[in-house]
Amino acid sequence: MKTVKVSVVTPDGPVYDSEVEMVSVRATSGELGILPGHIPLVAPLAISAVRLKKDGKTEYIAVSGGFLEVRPDQVTILAQSAELASDIDVERALRAKERAEQRVNQQRTEHTDFRRAELALQRAINRLAVSEKKF
Image (cartoon, rainbow, N blue to C red; front, side, top):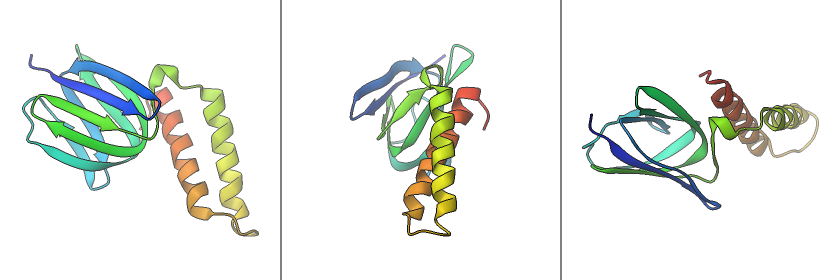
């Protein structure tokens, strides 16, 4: 079966680099499925899971937004942060979710940065979903 090279890179360095059969991502404009030979494309990514089909199995990576660049033989994802499902610390993600929920709820009584708290909550929920492969 044909494959496409996929690289996921963050400011801290590479997170993933392998040949896969299919890439599924959620861009800000909607869901994208990328197969080898896909037309060139650049798209901003939503906070979501990247799904990589390889050897009949699916691997998951939690990304906190970023950009996707597609070429016929290569897919590059540039993300502010990205974690393989197997590397996610679930306890840490649960604590982050609880803190973000508290900040979102404080918005009603204080002048917290609601959008920042909302994004932190989305990132924590995404990490938990990817770690449990539930989305």
